[in-house]
Image 1 (tube, rainbow, N blue to C red):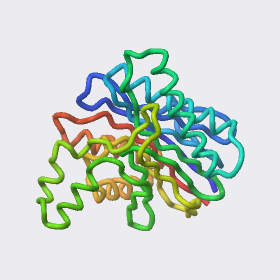
Image 2: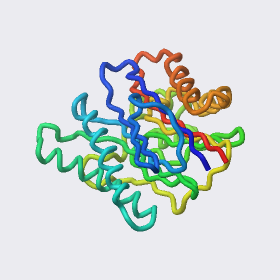
Image 3: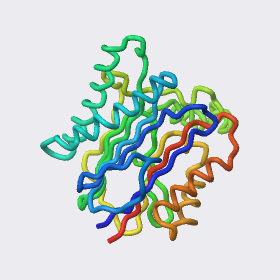
Image 4: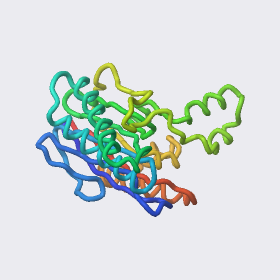
Length: 261
């Protein structure tokens, strides 16, 4: 299989950027989203983090986590599942070590989604609420768990204990139940086995700023721009987020991977 990748990012309504995302090819080339071209490869390692803890702390935590994750993946051994878990813990340790040396930044942290793609398909590990989507044959599926309060609020709405609109607008919706802060995260999502990929599949990895769009809107945007490739899809998704005009729009970083046979 060949994987075509691209990414883009926006600060949204924020005056700073706390997201970070890096793509590494099987040949060892690294592309920081927003600072590198699109490309293709037979193997990819992806890392995306969304920071918390203020401008300096959040941005630093995201960058530390992505870099530590990729470094660990490059030197890890054992099964892919074990490599992903080891890399996640190395990312968390990098934050812990930095905070130990800089106590003023105590409380900084980030979400992290790390994914590996190859002939086996895709396998990932994630903490937090940065979504990993699969678009296939006219359907969209969230592959990883959402560790924010959003799923809990949606459950209340489904049970009739809260209106759908109230659940969507609840200010607690983006509160995280798990994140990398240097201590052991309470929740970690990791599949039991790789997910096989098929030609024409589209993978979308993003920070939670993409949540301004409903899943149906993400699907429609991907399908409408499928002919434009990974770069065209990523740009179209970011335009769709910006077109909403949310007054408090969060940072949004989007990585798109399309699959060819």
